[in-house]
Length: 102
Length: 135
Image 1: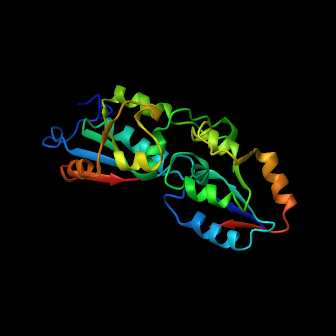
Image 2 (image 1 turned 90 degrees about the horizontal axis):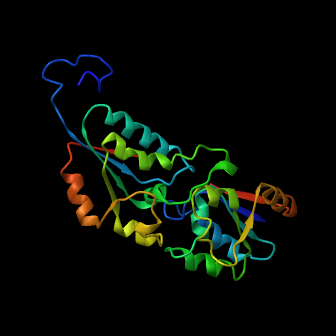
């Protein structure tokens, strides 16, 4: 299952809900952060610990063009894997199911 | 005054009124259209010689982050506009300290000089306005 989140963790509880479920069944699960959710992939903020904890069981990816657009390219947490649009497509193709958390 | 109103004579009695407007920005840029739309309204307000200020709270502080490069998402990078506000006599930019800290940001990460104020100070400024418009 590829879980896609697109909202800021400071504005919505989507990321938290997604991680609660994904971490309950981590095998084959991955998390991709896009659009305003890429702020969750950055260091020094209130949710950094949550992402570091998630990465112990679930691979975490972030969409590079969205990080760069927001000026967050130098703040990415170590261990978060960066993908471009091609990588996004690869992730979608590699996973049997995809859920865009709204 | 006629220059600021595009050559249109305003009705007598209205032309001299200056109100305190605060535009409150609470959304990150690009993910939604709020930040850009808010900025457009602020620029429009500048044409009416009003007392305009902007406050940045919550994810709104991300609007001012340095180093935004939007080419790859094919969206206009409007962040340089914040630096141009001074030229429109919009010089009062307030950023909430608590919001910056929750995001691991500080004044040096911002692309324009701002006044960093705590929640209490922001609240006092808001209470002092004639009009508060939130984006």
